[in-house]
Structure formats: structure tokens, C-alpha cells
Image (cartoon, rainbow, N blue to C red):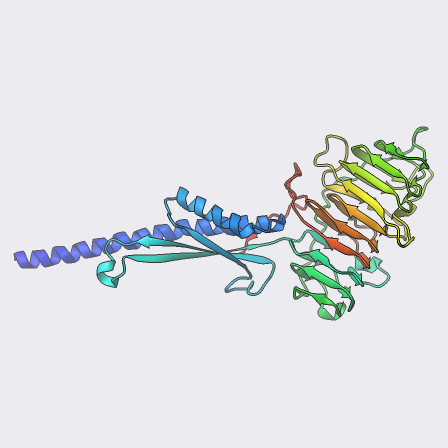
Length: 406
């Protein structure tokens, strides 16, 4: 009887021990999944913000969250594309693989191993921050048209384009991902791109449709056209009816705020335009039509210098994140021209009613530069973009957060 009891008691202890270890593993796995979710979101957000150390930041986040939940020695690794599921080989997602060694108390008597390694996976999807929405306005019918343009560096978040794109054999598009609503036959890609386009992507609505256009009804006696012929000069927020012209080789500084401009805008040959906290709103009225919008001229060999940064908030009257805003009712036939320009600064060009023409220009930014426009035409232009919206009080102006998909 004692022998039977001793054996039964040992078996009972074994089952209890097994239950304890299995229970601990299940609890730790649930906690580790939460760590993986957080790590994937952190790494993806850092990547979208242009942080080249996104893996390091994601791993540090995993270790910190793990320690807070009693999980020691948590490690994390990251890569584009998921191991399984619909996002295999997709550059629009970042997978976090999180591991943690767990000491065992009773299972070693069965398995012979005193530890096991738990693993959890999470996949976060990056969201577009370049939107090209109305290719039918482009005479050539493309949302994006690159001619002799390289490099075009848009590698920190996906690009979304309605219809198709054209990349000629002399262009190089370094995009994280291309989401195109059209079939492959709608595009002509002869140059180098580093992302396989995803054709027939889901149709999206304008992500900045929530932005309210500035109010403009009429001109007052003081709202007249301005032609700057001597410099250095300073411009102040307000309404410029009949156009704003900066003549050749002038240096102009724009004070922070909202500039309502009817009748068009011209920055002359060799001009310099500086401004911090500026929104330029192009519209019509007061006896003036829409006019043309030209940052720079067609004169080769002389670059114009544009250093404009959008407002971080609305305190000075401008629109947060938006540096150029074209009236949605625009009926002019010309594009927003950025010609022979060295363009720097943070801001979004928002023009759903017409396209943007970049010609023989160089564009770069410290934090972010995005477009939400009808279409983009580029010739002999180089783009180097980041997408760090942390300077803005509103956060990501596109309001499409990184999200978990697996």
C-alpha cells in the first residue's frame, strides 16, 4: 500500500509539475506576443520616420516591455516581408521576431532540457505618404512620370498612385513600395526601380480631404499685386491680389503665416526665397484668375534657392504641415512648376486639382517632404526625402497610422 501510494504520489507530482511548466509557457507566450506586437509597431513607425536605426530602437523597445512584464533576456530581429501569409516578400510590412529563453522546473525530467526558447511574430504594415490621385489631368495619362530623373529616393514609406506610372530608361526610382490601382499594362517601366509594383491595389480616398481651404472672398484696397525688384526684402502674411512676383536675383524672406495669392506666382532667375512656418495658398478672385505658379525659371545653369518650411501648428495662421496648397477649384492648365531649383525645407505640396512639374531641380529635406497631388512629372530632377512628422503638433498629417496585419 505504501509503495502504491509513493508511486501514485510521484506521478501526481509529475503531472502537477508538468502543468506548472506548461502554464508558465502559455502565460509567457501570451506576454511575448504583446511584446512582438509593440516591437513591430515601434520599428515600423521609426522606419517611416526615416530613422535608420529602427531595428535598434525596436529591439530596445522589446527588451524594455519584456522586462516590465517579467520576461528577461528578450531579443528581437526585424525584416521586410512576412514569413507566412499574404505579406510574404512585401516591402510594405516589417516583421518582428521576438524570442525569450524560459527556464523549466519539471519538464527537464521528461525532455532532458532545462530551458526552452519561446518565439512570437508580429507584422506591421507601413502606410503611404506620397499620393498621386488624378492621372487623367496629365496629358500623358500617368500618375507619376519620370524622365532622366535619378535618384528618386522615396524609401521610407510606400507610394500610392492611381492608374499607372512611367519610368524611362534613364530614371531610377528607389521606392519602398509602389501601390498602383491600374493593371500592369497601364504602366511603362523601363528604368530601374527597387520595388516590385503592386498592381490593382485598393482605391483610396484623398487622405488630406479633412483639410479646410482658407477663406477668401474678395480683395480690399490693400490687397494688391506685389512685384519685388530690390532686395533683401521681407514679405508678410496676407492677401496678394493680382499676383506675387519676385524678380531675378532677389532675396526674399517670408514671415510665418498664411499667404493667399491670386493671379499666380513667379520666383525669378537666381532668386532666393526663405520662410519658416509658411503656407502659400493659390486661388482666384478679386479680378484675378488662377494664373501660373512658378518656383524658378527655364534659364539653365542658374539655380533658384527655395528654403520653405510649413507651420508646425496653426498659431500664426498657416496650415500645419502644408507649405503649398492649390485651390481645389483650380481650373488653370499649368502645373505647379519647380524649375531649376534647389529646394529644401519641410512641408507637403497639396494640389488635387493640378500636377507638379519638377524640372532640373534638386530637392531634399531635414524632416519630411510629401506630396498629395493630381500627378507628378519629373525631368532631370533628384529627390531625397524623409518622412519624420515628429516636429508637428498634429503628428502624421495623413492620419494613417502604422497598423498590425499579422
